Length: 470
Image 1: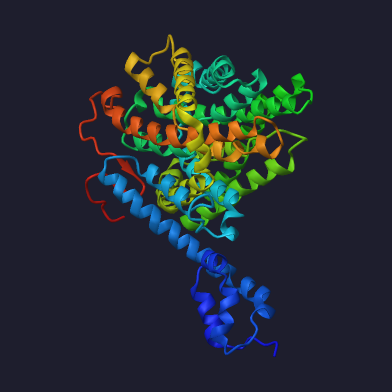
Image 2: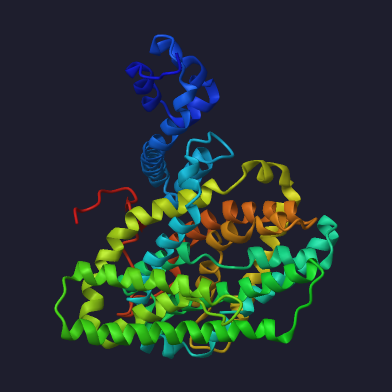
């Protein structure tokens, strides 16, 4: 009889995680519980019905594990970000393989949603007038540190690892991008507490870091094209300023239009938040639609839209910014756990001390680039050192492009992926910890005095204390 009506059989399957089913092949043993009826006839239907169950189960594992490890690292006075990354590594496909494929298949989109949330929050706190105070360093820091780091990799990697010059350039372009997901929340915390804002240091780092990513991704595309035997023209490099300008123009235009609309039509702040989120998603879609025709940076457009609203309608910006802060509590966990899930720990274990030493050395080149960019400015030596520290973290861009050379079939694909993995594991927690540990010693409050009460905070709690109810 080709039937599968045994309720105990189906109930047993629903209770079991997909990975347990795969591991123990319960699809074979389950008919025992169904009075001998044949289960495989209904296997496609059952798997389709259970996709939402598996996804919800995976989300529960993600949040609970990240919160638990975040709490543990809080007690150790280490960044909770490290706990989230480790949670992702443990739950991901290269370790316990608990996160369902249905969730991993939309990992890129989920990470983009989290980035949109934090960049909107950044834009709503980015006062253009403060950025104007900084001047020249805001432009230089958007590309000079990355060039220094790529140059350092091209200088050191060939003799140390035996790679070619173009392969070293690809490695450098992968690790050269700073992570907005790490530095933006830290800089927003400083802005809210008015630390370093008198000279616009947090604003400088947020804005330049976002442009830095655009610059590095264009270089990565150029280097991989050369490695594949293609030709790179001057028009390719022209994409950098064009994508920046078009992104800024789109963000300013939409931000101005939304400001007029919000001033003339009464809407709940929650509805305004949803409209901003939808516009941001459309920016990313427009960037994809126009790819190959008109270069455009969707993420820069997101920040520009928020900054325009702050400039034209500050009351609204101050009202809805806390709502994005609350959204970031969940988005931060999703972002860093899924970044951790992309990390193949086997590549990191095979890397050896030479690769780690190389990454640390090219970080020194990057820090030298930051120091050069801030030379002959109003920033004193301590503030320049803090800017160097704040430019250390890497995570999101490396997770996005680290595996592409391997997928392209380039001989250097494995070593590039290993470099990206190590860059995330080393620099993200190191940079986050260094920022938290150094800002009170290196920056001044807007009132002119040093920050006294040093409490390392993040979106899910306070180090060594209790979080007030919001």
